[in-house]
Length: 196
Image 1 (cartoon, one colour):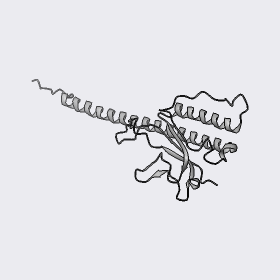
Image 2 (tube, one colour):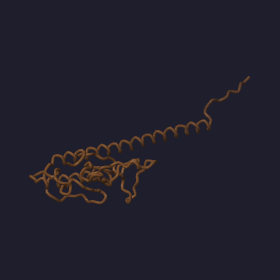
Image 3 (tube, one colour):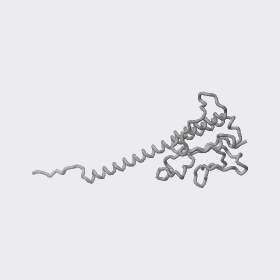
Image 4 (cartoon, one colour):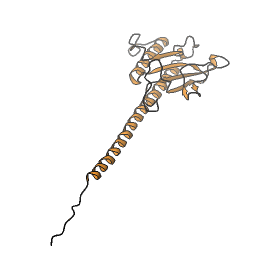
């Protein structure tokens, strides 16, 4: 007498369910990897921005011949640079090979720093000004406008503001690319708390 043996194995439905579960896992892992890359890139821009702001603050303090002038004569104050609007600057005296006056050194350092902003930060923008209220609590961001203190502009802190177009500005992780809407400053560093 012969017995019927049932063959064991996977049905097509089981295979399809397994492939679906595997695909969901792979898509989830890819999303996590994309988010990690986006975060790493934004962190690199943030680190570069902090280094550039610290570098300019040190250069401003080191050039006492220009930094200690009144705001209307100080070349560092009221600097407003946008890499989207300005070409690479190469003209002017080079202070690497020859001695420069305090004024020439300030112009040279500003020019070199602006070029580094352009090369390092996408859509980089910089503003150095006296600002009593750099933070906008309504929008939860720094602002480009410079607001004087109630007692007068010369009592407000001297601030370096740096911004760039980076990922993560919108809820879906995309950036605001409208040229008419500049990205808000990503950071603001105080160089001097108030003018003397």
